[in-house]
Length: 70
Image 1: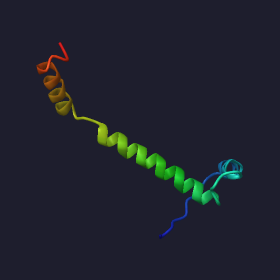
Image 2: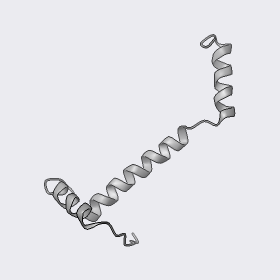
Image 3: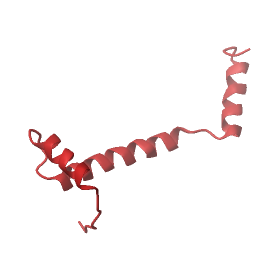
Image 4: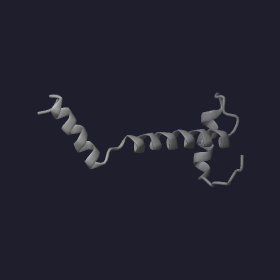
């Protein structure tokens, strides 16, 4: 895996060091990589679930036709 360097404020680095002391994470780098992957996955999941206005209107029309909406 190719790596790139990212700089973070010292106070954040130190907070992460404290946070990972009694966890499975072996380094700040490992923890930050994990957190960023989780955040990105969550954002991608949210983006996939967003309907365009046209799609939303089609869903509403179907629900009206089925009697679920007035």
